[in-house]
Image 1 (cartoon, rainbow, N blue to C red):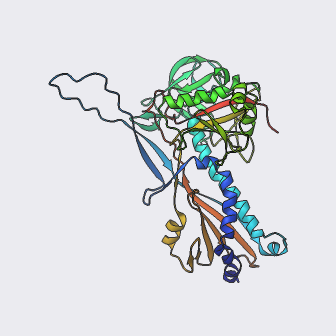
Image 2: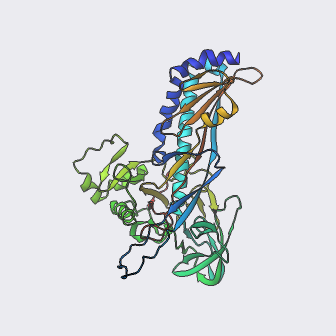
Image 3: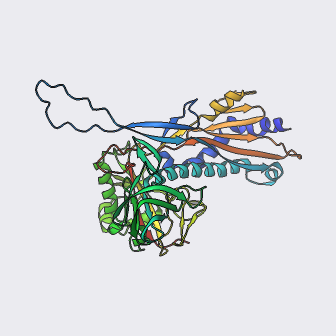
Length: 464
């Protein structure tokens, strides 16, 4: 019955691409961050983690060589970053007795629902990797000391590792992390997270020497990612609901990227991803209004709302915001009464309850996407038994399809009923992915380890 159901009912839909198209059409509108991540196939035999090498820029030669003197060789400096590739899946059941009684085709509906889930999940994975890197090294002190060496901070992201000979290693008394607490320079020599399951969550930095600091003081790493805020606010606590988005902030971000030698995206623009609320605020900015005066407000073919100078703006409701569909399972930050995302390690609100909107300006090669072609890599290893046709395969008694291009080959598996009544079909999607964020500590004019994108933080009244 199972084999007959798959071959008689679903294979014809796969042959006509109905199932694939239903999944793909639901997948694609949710992948704006994913679209910024260039696809690269993950090679066989690399294990679960790959180490990528980035050459630094050589120092310019400004002095002439002395007569009768050979030039001195200066070796290139290199740095490395690691990417771990993991498998992600989502699944749902389709009871055939329910499918029989529904007016709409339940299989196509489930394909659409799973396509939305898959696209949103992959998109947020890219976002989380990108934002985690570009929030790194920015925190707030939870406790105070006069003086002390145990500095409790909101996040260990960007603090618990330091770069030694181009390679990130855990901080220690030998491998110190240069930080600034308030206006005082210090060295961190150990990191203890509050929860070992969340090493980048809240925790305690141990300092090499005692210093004095106040609660809620700014804590930054010397090689932090630069964050722009209205009025040059030092932390998110200085933001109020009136500190809304202004075009000048995004122009400043583009200037910083250009000054660090970051190339625009392939279309010649730095891409700005903003929430609908940020774009609404920009509509009240005088400079933004003047530049858009007389222009059509319709979306461009690539989904953007238009260009200003070197900037192309995209409305993206998956920029970080509170909510289970955007930033689920937040961690509680002790004493401050705030919530921290465990995925990109930033507080969703400041300590006065102002919601923090985080837009991002992205340059070329900021993030990429390693993928495993699952149907070729996994199924061929297991052996294919049954039909092989363009767009799908019968693997044993399962129908397997691949979604693409542009998504890095998402595999969709439809398994026939194996329950006692023989009436529950299972649909599953699977994607094996890694999302490397390219380091460039040794390039550009600023000290940040990551400087191919830049986050702009603004204040907004709580939503909901």
